[in-house]
Amino acid sequence: MKLWSGRFQKETDGKVNDFNSSIRFDARLYREDIRGSIAHASMMGEQGIISPEEARKLVSGLEDLLADIEAGKVEFSPDNEDIHMNIEALLTERLGETGKRLHTARSRNDQVAVDLRLYLKREIPKVLEQILDLQRVLVKKAEENLDTVMPGYTHLQRAQPITFAHHMMAYANMFCRDVTRLEDCLGRMDRSPLGSGALAGTTHPLDRRKTAELLGFAGITENSLDGVSDRDYAIELCSALSILMMHLSRFSEEIILWCSWEFKFVELDDAFSTGSSIMPQKKNPDVAELVRGKTGRVYGSLVTLLTVMKSLPLAYNKDMQEDKEPVFDALDTVRLCLPVFTGMVDTMKVRPDNMRKAAEKGFLNATDCADYLAKRGVPFRDAYTASGRLVRECVEAGKTLEELSLEELRKYSPAFDGDVYQALSLDECVAQRKTEGGPAPEEVRRQMDLILKFVEAR
Ligand code: ARG
Image (cartoon, rainbow, N blue to C red):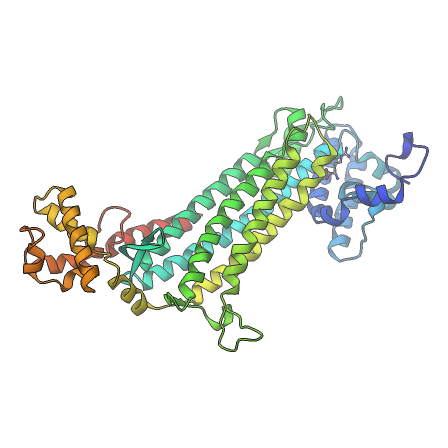
């Protein structure tokens, strides 16, 4: 018999029963559901809504049930629709009359809202920890490659010289923003909707602040309609996770490129690559490709949630039961991706020689050539034009800028002098880029220290 069977004369159609039931995906909220019920029962005992003995009985019954679920001794049933009614039914089976008092002054609408917030509050810190692990690895990789000159690209065309350490710190900074975005999201999520009831609060003398405190929330949601209909926190989380995955997908894409024979900037460890079933020579960056692919899946969750919530009238609507699968899937996917990705980066071998070789070709020092002239008083636009012409001559002659003689250089500008060769050397081009945020080793060192401070402050 359904918990809500009172006003019905017929049994639920079997297909509707299965269709309506969410237990197969909300069962994972059992801990939070029981925690929420324990807080609610204790508060009701203190407020005299139920007797202190009844409250004690409910609390210990719920604790026993939790232990049994954890020990695998309990089976949930789709006939009880969702995790909330499954728990209540199991409790009532065990406690009889007292069990029936648990749902006083409460609705599944505020119950599911509090459960989901509690669950996400527990899970998000695990993601944060995984991001921090990745950042530590990035600092380690940077440490080993402060002087590893590589081409920096725009439009995937060789642009200006940077170092591999500088490149790693670019990602480390993106991940700092991911961390703070998730922290912001956690902060806004940290309010208890319990006591909002179905939508309009309750006539019972609840102490909402008491349950919020027992459940470790920083405060309560201030409007009962909003309390049961808000899913912003789940959307914000999926949005933050989507941006994180976007970063991982860009990093993956670069790693895939770097592994190709065309680049050969890195080599993935055997333990983090895969082979082909037909081509014996293949070593594929499957991990990076899968992370890139799973990004689509996390975006999908965000779009699902936004679309489910679009135009929903207040307050609770059953549509909102569709919030759980996408948010769980987004979290599961990110938690699956991060440690594998971190392991892949940690173990990949960097090929400084190939990076340098690539940086030597493609006129990455052309800007430095123009800057050299500008520093000698040539207006930058003229210096730029002279350097551009030099590049054109070199392209035709199959030479690099530094292979031209001083006389050849002077044909384009009399401001060239013997020290130009020093200014055009790759190491110098990197070492002189000391602007805050730039690739000069001492500057990247400062960036690394900031990342380490950020990680340690958490
Ligand atoms: N299983 C439901 C959900 O996940 C719980 C709330 C149901 N409330 C209701 N009035 N049907 O959203």
